[in-house]
View 1 (cartoon, rainbow, N blue to C red):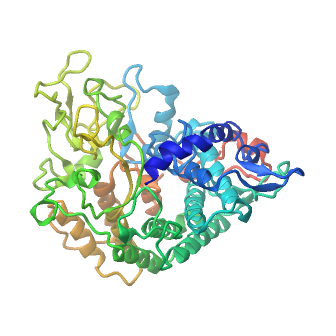
View 2 (cartoon, rainbow, N blue to C red):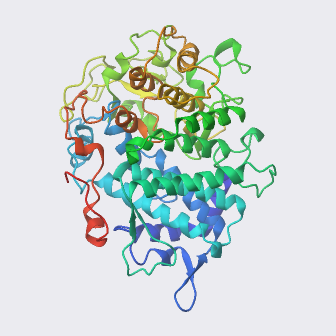
View 3 (cartoon, rainbow, N blue to C red):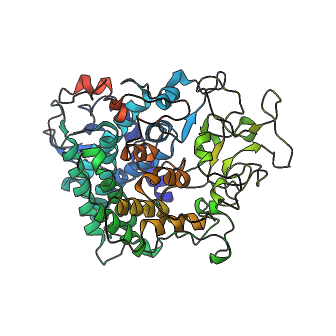
Length: 539
């Protein structure tokens, strides 16, 4: 499994190289970038990466704290911050001197960022660096086998998607391009075509019948490690790419393909994970979806990141609960459920004591220590997370804000007994099913269920009463109720963009903002070093 690869082989072969790579990638694909990860001939020509296996590991893993891999997405910064904190489900509250961070969080939520924003810069650098590293691995001189090729194609497609999604244009350097020449810049349509071409090729190769150690993409029906990209993950990414096509390129994507890809994921054995007596494992909680070790027959998780989901716990809980106490969900998001009662909607979670005193779902009310003692804040006030609308990003006490936590806590340090810490769930079938429903409402055909049936199946699992009708305009709230805070591909920001709500809608502590903020600015350092880039309108 990739856990062992990450902890051993990656550290052995490429830890130092990745740190050097990122140290040299502070502008737009610097001339020295290739030198840190590749082999050159005596004449200076590219001759392949030093190790195809280690390079693939770098594309997956976070490596050092500033790693470029997909697994870096479990962080609370960079892609997660731009996708979730800048949208209408998550905010980071300054509490006295805590979480001020020079306003880096506040300007995201309020849509007042500029081209110098730290997480804009870091997302640009890391995702573009990963595109180049994947391109180097895909070159025949790097000697990738069929499996490494297919996985690198999917990873490059994901990174092209992310840069295009955030910035509307994608710089691209071929492995043989002279390092003194600025990278070309792909238009939105060209970048979209590159990502789709990579995914098409990987999915086509991954459908081969051979399933040995060198199979192009692992067969998800085999029950193999969910931390490797498999056929279902590739299909999931392609479905999201097509669903987002119009906001990325101005041209509607293929909704029939979205539905076909989700159908194919279902054919691989993925489905909504059951709850309660009807589930073979006897699960009793909706939140066991995020507890793969405690829910051995989980049929929902398509891909997870090998690492540590504690950030999703610590960044929201109070220091007296072991946390950092900045992130909250918006009260408006909680109220979309229309109930406090988990018997009416399991997704709201319960109030009161869990194994360590921290519940799952919307954490609210009087907080309790593991021994049942009511907790206080650091000023000795009762630690109560109240259902009150938030009014300020800058002035808050330690108690303001409801928290959203989906990973069950099984012991005092946030881990599972005998099993280390929780892996981070990145893609699950419910998200895919909601894509299928939305694609159906956008005119796609071929789904086994109507969009209304699809949504009602998801509601039924949470014990929510069925809807009598469903329109496309209902989907943003449906998506919020199910996916809040998860950091899914594209995040809440993309949902709002697809429905024309990202800059036009107000939410707690955010007013209507300029339409140009639909895209992020190109960092100033990138503009300064690549004359082929054109700053996005408004910046």
